[in-house]
Amino acid sequence: MKKNTAKKTWGIITLLTILLVLLILFNLGIGDTPIAFADIIKALVGVGDPGIQFTLFEFRLPRIALAVLAGAALAVSGVIAQSVMRNPLAAPDTLGLTGGAGLGAAIVTILLPGAHSFILAGAAFSGSVAAAVFVYLLAYREGISPVRLALVGCAVSAFCHSGIQLLISRISPNVNSALVWLSGSLWGREWDDVLSLLIWSVILIPLALFLAGPMDLIKSGDDIAKGLGVSLEKTRLLLLAITVFLTAAAVSAVGTIGFIGLMTPHIARKLGGFYSKQLIPISALIGAIILLTADAIGRGLIPPIEIPAGLIVAVVGGPFFLYQLWRASNRRKKR
Image (cartoon, rainbow, N blue to C red; front, side):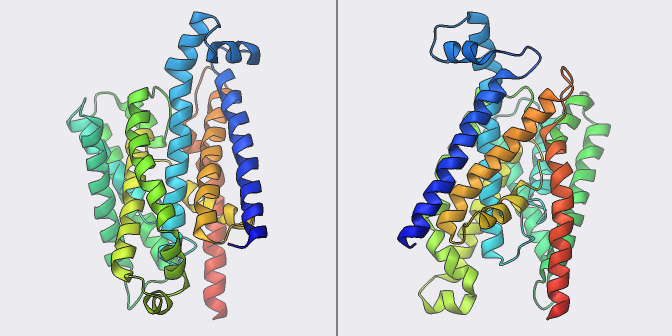
């Protein structure tokens, strides 16, 4: 990257980081019992009221940390999917990965209650892989068109969601909590959930950054990537595996939250990101901000009732997806 471009990128990252920190402090204060900013600061430095400290460290901080990690993981998954597939409609949810991961995790949650988080992540990963293969086989017709891939991915995702609802209604004794998880919620999350997602994020997001150069070459075209020495199939498979693992880890932690992976790369590009080394950190911060904002709205809109964060994101994400679908369709007609 050129010096001016790098300076602009760091400026955007700094502003987004400040916004994220402010959102975290705001989220710490809202809930059934609002907490004043001064009391939050005292509690964080260890000199505040013990009751406030317990509320912050045992209830609010875990869900905030999980929102940041899940939003970043889904956003980075979207960047990789759109770059590797050279498709502006590619994302974990439009490719069926989120739905497949949700179905796998739901099967384990319902049939093996109390299963270890790694078993849950393994089931979510298996569901993601199965969904991805299924989408590819159904969408392939002497090549892959962006519109067909998105439509097939949405159909597979809807099928997976129907399977989850069937499992919940027929088998699960706790339908309400299961449906909240299906809608994508951060309610009732603990530090164990944070740790599980943190492990995957710390390994896979830096790996995606390390592969940013080859990712840009693949985005430029297969012939260019091969000509410049990229081991195309191995690199593409590794990048898609990162997408699947990040999606599965996020879904097993917070449920099926859609559209973040679709929206964030487009927003990051509007902010000036082009290369993957720019898009990945900027998109990760935007994804964290979107999910944290959605959770804040869901908790603060009509307390003490909580609206799942996934539903709040869908209110914006649904129209955004339709707009991108319309744009892709128009571009195809002009060719």
